[in-house]
Image (cartoon, rainbow, N blue to C red; front, side, top):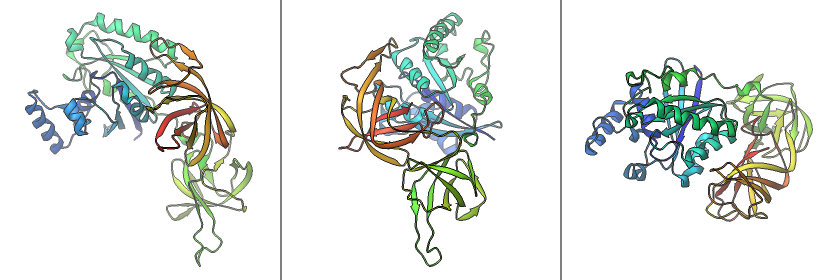
Length: 412
């Protein structure tokens, strides 16, 4: 049974948490004690039936304010496939949290309040979906019950979002009218909108094609730890442990080590303490080499099409710090297990989320700004462009003083 990861997004109060709660409730994926708790909470708030948003709003502040702050993950399955859902916050100050959830998503549900239509945060989340190359876009126009299930209003929003998706080069969206609170078109088709001829949300999610397996991509494995037991049984053993991010590897294969740019031969593969003839993504293994090479944490084993090897590159990023970014600022760059010093040489442009215009060379970037940066690292790093490989094509900028994440990067 294959797995689909998807995220819900949209502006605040568009109904993201309620949609997920309704999916879990109507698909009978809630434990009995959880159901009792949300039904009791619903009664205290004067709600008829369970308060479905509580299934994802787990923080006390979220329950008190009725908003989503952090990304909540929920798991459920049907007879056809398994799902991991990320419920992203809608408030603009929590956009950085949304990026965390979207970075691993195979699909995105963009919720739009039928009364309000497309908002700035709808645009911002759609831009992020475009930057993250999420190929499966489902636009759920929610709260149709509050506009009397008006087909004309549904069509108006579809036309407006079509223009936005064209500007962003998004894959062709799937549109669906819903009411998350009432359950219209969530698991079963709604009799209230007989003019809608498409499938329910759950059926759409079940029918999304599986994503391309990481096994089909070129072999990539970044060293997380050098293993030197130096015990009586393993006097000369030197192994390199890490997660196979993509592809497969077998004993006897020749691979390159970057940034050293040397060829080595795989002598042995150990998976879970057991020698194996081969292994593949996403397993964590320890490999032993025939050659004696000085390899350390953060070095990359690669085969097939070689990744970039450079200390100067551009990257699209979302600025996540309350401290403004200016050209010339120094950071630590965390690229998987590799940590290097770097400098942001130039802010090439800032994207205006309202007009989608590029504002060239702004003086600074502020919280939640989408920017393209020119970065130079102290030592070269090895990476594939983000659109080709999500794992090696991502990195973060870390503040040297506070050690907090300042910017999420998609390398190009």
